Image 1 (cartoon, rainbow, N blue to C red):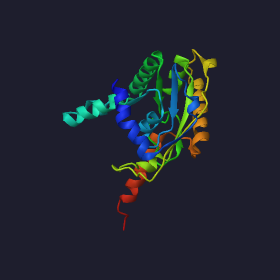
Image 2: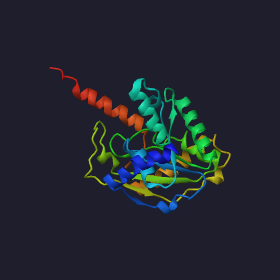
Image 3: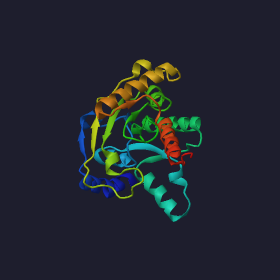
Image 4: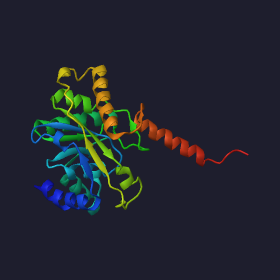
Length: 239
């Protein structure tokens, strides 16, 4: 009920204010479990996609959004719960992966839609990065649910990193691809080569839908490289 109320309070104004265009809505099943695997350009991705869907989609979010102290923290936690996000502790890479898998399977067992960002974090420069196989592929193979590739387009231009106010002049887009069936690999969710293959197939479809340049490294590594380069550039040059 809270999700439906939040969708009315947020979803309708989002659609009215930004007029997001969408292609491929017919690929979202009217009922039953499915995994929505999307690229990740902006914090707002988790709001634009649910706004255009009739069904509830549940994403995972870092636990800090749900545990911050004070009134602001409680309001933030209530907001994220209301828009259908589940907390995951990302303090440890392996622990975070296991938590994401358990959360995803629980959502799918209820016959609902589970949303996940295979890159694991937002793209630092608008390019598409290598997908992490630990979450997406294991959930897909363990559940047998179809994977629907999703491309968010221009959402990073609506709300660039570090900017509070969005740009209402930008009209973002969402392109939804045909469901991918990985039932041929059922029961092989612990085979790292199969996990890599499944993840790469999904990332290829996302790349095709989004038109992004693909970079074959993890986004987390790219962020470290960018931060290190910025640090070196800021250091005073030797005389």
